[in-house]
Length: 210
Ligand code: SF4
Image (cartoon, rainbow, N blue to C red; front, side):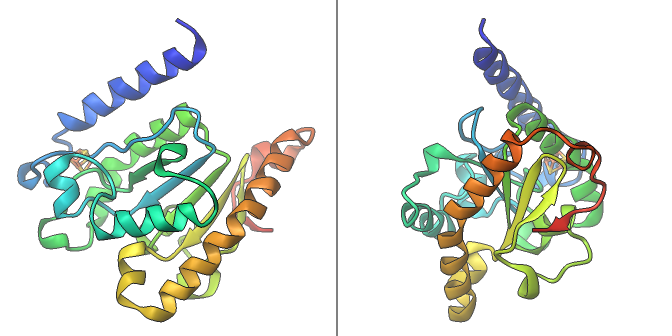
């Protein structure tokens, strides 16, 4: 088994754990857990808030209107959903699409942690406030959307959630503009990884605005 196959097997085993997980009360109301999907060597990872009704029904992330919009946004920079890894902060649907609760986010945190370790993306695009708060708890999305923050060996780029942007024309424009900046940020991230390691690269505790 080569390294890629080994990582794919780890990711599949993790997804199986998620599908059987009962670590928080959301397990009682979900139809299907939604571990996430995409290539194991994706350099770009999109992290939303949690599954909605369509995702809960199918077990796949971002398959409703927000998912279609995300695919349109990816197309504006020459990417498809098969090029990126897509997942959520909580892997099971909160009832009636309510916000995920702190205990649910905490319970689900290790799964995302393992996914990040296996995939090791260069860039994490957080979609919406809940995903942003994992790395940038003191920031406001209205102020920092589209900016890149260095966090260890990767860049964190907060953006509005596509579902919220579909309801708010101003946020939609922001999201479309932020996506158009992504190719430049991808280059930044590649250059950062290729640069000789410095102390800050491996020890950054706090994100730093680039
Ligand atoms: S949301 Fe996460 S922690 Fe809660 S049951 Fe689903 S997979 Fe487990």
